[in-house]
Length: 337
Image (cartoon, rainbow, N blue to C red; front, side):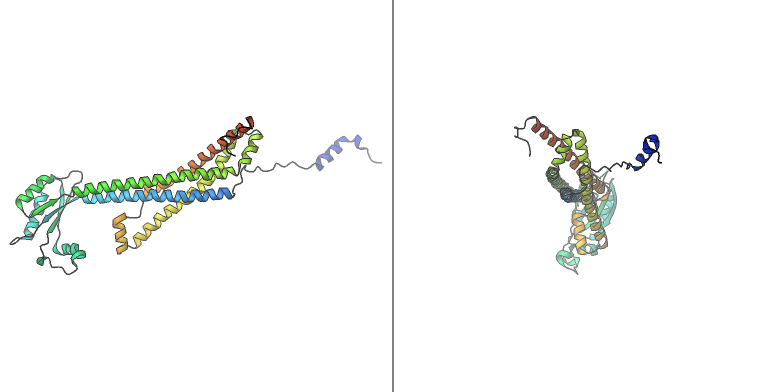
């Protein structure tokens, strides 16, 4: 005979425990899907705007550095021009003008532009094979000066005029003033374009973020109805859009940095060609430098933070609209659907 189950409760309890299935905790999933159509579209928009913003920032940086280089090159030199005359010893006058200029404090060195170099300067206008003896072409003396301690130009001009009547001094101050004005105007225009790009980026990100959130409004409503706090819901959406914005801004910024690096590499490999020389003369080297790349990285961070802040504000406003509708269902004025 078998023993009744009631007489051995410990064995029955053990069998029941062995048959009971183990409890498994389901893995937690994010509130928002990691990738959807709205998120992908927003990431593409952010990438494009980040690329344009970084491209404009790099262009402004290039123009500013090139203008500063032009200003420095012009302001560190002055030119003495000597016009030819009958029975006039040009070579002696050139040497005398150079020596007189170097007697002033603030001058470093002097160089006489010889006939061959003068002919090369005039070659684009008068053609090759130019004989300077057949034409009354002025000769030049280039004096390098100390930018931090320039000489007395008025005294130097008066002394040269007394010693060599055919000599005239050009200190390039007129050109420097025009160049500084042009540089400032160019930088202001570039800064204005940069502000316009950032404004367009802000508006685009705001509308794209609100559009992406509109597709997930039901998630916000469900979470809010079950008792989730506004800060919790906003934080979850904030994390989601922070990932999207970081990916998008990183792609756009990386493409902009790659563009400048590629342009600089191409320029370095095609030196001494007419196209590259003209581009270098107008725009300088296609290199934004360390500060430029730091600005591109800062732009990426600003775009990511802007998108995240916009998402948080949008979620908070959505929750406020939900609360307003629950408190007064008849009120629909000023409340988005």
